[in-house]
Length: 197
Image (tube, one colour):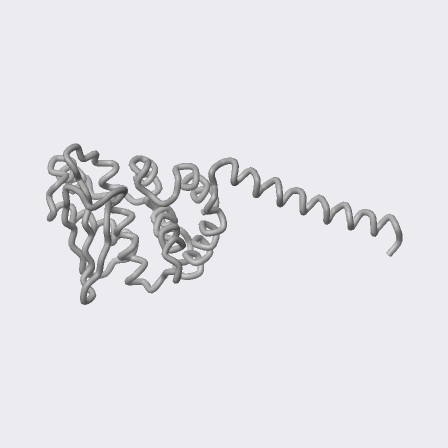
């Protein structure tokens, strides 16, 4: 290797390092603090599910009923089944119940007992349909991922995976509409994840 080739190789290596540092700094400046978890989630979903799903289009009559009676548990359960059917058609053992308040900074909770899933959603006094729907989608993703055996050991990584799965499975439109302040990923991170998908 002559001096020119060695100099070129060194400069090229330095260029790659500088570009990597610039990319990381830009991501951090833009508020993309979970970029590695997002990429890891996308890689896991791609390996387990294949290509991303097409956009979700809910049943119009069901959505109309939901907007008319946002606190109705049977309508919310039917909507959860519709969401989960978009992910994978199978019998879903899950119910949805509303609560006035679940706790500080808690919009929804998912639990499972004896194989039966339950979602609780905080509706409060002034429920906003787009927020309720995005919370319902997030909690449904917990159920889908659990029943599909997809997940991480780490709790934070699982929450990032849950938000990322909602995008990967075609719910971007609804997540972007109502997800401000209720998800684990920031709005900028949702947009970033969408671009990666």
